[in-house]
Amino acid sequence: MNIYLMAILAILVGSYLLDLIADLLNLRHINPGMPGEFKDVYDPLKYRKSQDYLRENTKLSLATGGLMTALTIGFILIGGFNIIDLFARSFNLGQISTGLIFAGGLMLVSQLCHIPFDAYHTFVIEEKFGFNKTTPKTFITDILKKWLLGALMGGILFSAVVWIFHAAGPLAWLYCWGVVALFQLCIIFIAPAVIMPMFNKFTPLEEGRLKTSIEDYARSQDFKMKGVFRMDASRRSGKSNAFFTGFGKLRRIVLFDTLIQKHTVEELVSVLAHEMGHYKKGHVRKSALLMVLTTGLMFVMLSLFINNRGFFEAFKMGHTSIYASIFFFGFLFIPIQTILSIFGNLLSRRHEYEADAYAALTYGKPGAMISALKKLSVDNLSNLTPHPFKVFLDYSHPPALQRVAALKEGAEM
Picture 1 (tube, rainbow, N blue to C red):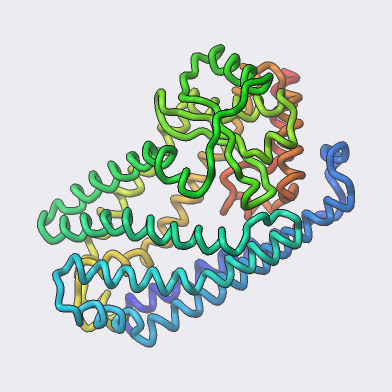
Picture 2 (tube, rainbow, N blue to C red; picture 1 turned 60 degrees about the vertical axis):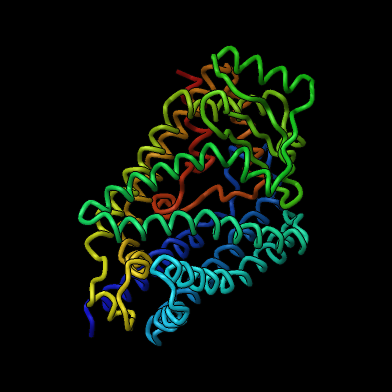
């Protein structure tokens, strides 16, 4: 058997088994006894509801992962990639146009396979637990918008990478790294003004105590921003959140309307102080640097597998091509991506603790931050007792209990 095929099959199965082990450990770690720290905000009935929510989502995740893994393996073994490649080549176009047809065909197949699972999650699970506000029309419109954005932005970037590998010789990986890294950074600027308004409505926060408190705190921290905005998150979900977008003077604070409805002014300012802490502590720059370095590593490795005949035989391909090499390399990069993701999550969790501490210190109300964390956990039916291995593997934020404990310890020092 082709050694590349053996490696790819092992990677696909191994990746699913890793997720399976983490999820099963997480389910077994469910504690029916409510943590004492949350007894003031969580009634027993809703706490049991949060555990049922975890079970439902985990079952769907395992079913989705298992079926998609089986479909992917079957698609490889029956030569599905070659079928789509032959279709793309039948138009007798250039490498870039043929590559776009090939990529579009694969992405369409993948997206169509995921739609039933996404619909079940939205209209069955989220509906059952009182979160869903998405209408079928919005669900379909969102899918079409994402496809349009993916075709436009992804198509341009994919074309650039294929062209560079065709034209630039041995240093193609370096030029691709520069182009893609620049694109990734540009998206950070473009997203708040162009992309996000395609999905949600952003309106300036009305005058009042909340806006005044946020602006006063921002001035006290010499934090320049474009404004404070309310996002109509309730169009799709009852869950709550807040975030910053943009860089420099283009930074804007965004509050979910669901968050505003459920929290006090002090809690909201604490949440935003936490987000501001990410900027003040340099977390955003560090995350961007990690993203750029990961992209560089990916292109260095990709350059080693371009047009590798044995690699293409694993996918039963009749022709080699740069555009297909990019897709096939993604399978080999899965283990490295998993390792990088674990490291990135470890760094992110540390950053969350630092941002919490920054908010408690600069705003001077750690109790408000603790209260906000508790309410967010309850409102979103978060798992309060995840298994350590699940946290290690997947969590970008520390569990709420650990964050509350760290805040209390800091307040007592």
